[in-house]
Image (spheres, rainbow over the protein chains, first blue to last red):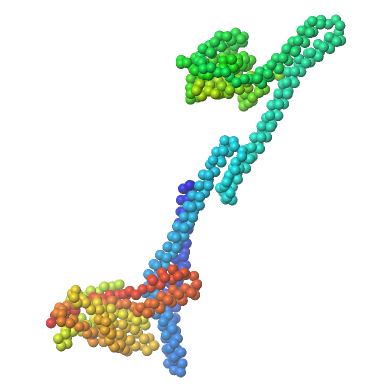
Amino acid sequence: MNLRLMNTTLLISLMATLIVVKLVQNQLTGSILDVAFNQESQSLLLSSRDDQRQLAELDSSRESKYRQRFDVIQTHLQRMKIIEANRRRIKQRSDLLIWLVMAIVAGATAWVLLSRSRRRDQRLRQLIPHLQALASGSHRIQVSEQGTDLVGRFARLIEDTASGFARERQRSASLQNLKSWQEMARRHAHELKTPLAALKLELERLSEHRDVDRAAAVASMFEELDQINLFVAAFTGFARLGKPRTEVRDLGPFIERFATTFASAWDVLEIHVELATQPVIAAIDIHLIKQVLVNLCSNSAHAGASRIQLQSSLHVNRRDVGIDVIDDGPGLPDMIRAHLFQPYTTTSKLGEGMGLGLAISRKIMLDHGGDLILLFSGTAGTGFRLEFPHPEDAP
Amino acid sequence: MTLLLMMGMNWGSVLVNQGSERVFLLRIPEYVLSDSRVQKSIHSGLTCTLMFDLRANDAFRKTGLVTVRFEPWDEIFLVEIVVDGQKHNPQTVTSNKDLIAWLTQVGFRIHTGDQVIQSISVNLKLVPFSEKEQEDAQRWFTKDLNNDRGSLSTVADYVLASSIGRKSACQFSWEVDLAP
């Protein structure tokens, strides 16, 4: 409940009540009593009364009539005297009555305000789960609140926002999907176009020129076909990416062996290892994780890094462990960071890379129950983390 | 309300014996009757009541009252006396002077029985109007007057009516010495 608002309302009600009480007291009680005790009125009544007696003396035939009038006026004068004798008490009681009425009105108003405020709070509390659902991305929200007041409008707003979000998400997903397909079609077309064009040229050469070196032409055509095969194999690998066959092991020796095996794999890249003092145990598929590390090292080498460091870490996220891969390259361009792990995201020119490496790597890590995270990227280099769950939490 | 305590003054009350019974005449002091508030009340046209409360000891207590109503048409005072529940014949007094003289000189007979009483404390209260007049004023103020305005409720009527009450306008006390 908004206590500040309630207190302000009650204060305003109280002040309004005080003003009304004073007005009513002055206008009602005061004026009634002033009329009753008006000296001029009393003097006139007194004079009128005495006039009746003088009239009776002058016209004795109508004495009874004058006497009757005299008595009526006298009765009124007496009543006024009685009321005057009780003036203070009448005033006190009237004021008390007005205060009582106003207190009841103020009390009733406060009670109504309080009840309404409580009811509104209760209704607002009932909206919290719907807001939480909205925040978690649910797009089918049906609020039972049917009021037409502010709370009701708020409920409608939640429903409208959820349905708006859903529409926008669908639209965005469709656009994203189309964009991905466009990009994929463009890259596929390019990857196929080059070897096909070369094959066509060789075939033309063979058909038009009898003196061509047939063996060299055939060898060239096989090279182009191998290129197409490589292209197909990359997609086949992505499509057939299997579930990891994990085994629990210490990541330290695994990293060391990787560094030794691939020490000369990239001419420009020097691999360094830094291990945790304690064993870093995780459930991993060594072939798939090796593929991830190869992807990351290849990217670093391609980006121009000369040194890459592999370090095992304990407790990277509560019970989780990890391998940090940090290079000294120039960092990732800002424009690709937001969709770094999506397929066909690459800094390479067309024909030099498909942009599937990080997408495949992340898929592998997700399949391990962990994740591939970009730690940082800048002029000092780029850092990724391979995060693994505790073996007990692994899928 | 004013309390005038005139201790030790006899104010002319007289002890008389009536056979074996002891009787004394209670006279109202002149300063009481001449008091402006008493005079105003006596001449108001309302039934003004002077209520006595006589006390000597725990055993002796007498009450009495004198009602005075000024009749403005005839300019006469109608006086009634009730002592110890016994109503005396109404008297008519033609002037204020006669009224004061009568009440201060004639006095009221108070029977003390066979008790030997040395002194009596007298307390006199002035009630400016009668119960009947009060009820009439209540009706007029709350019903007739409100009907004209047509606004106040029954609750308000009751509250306003109950605020009109009979209470003494002033009070006087003195001692009556009955020592032989």
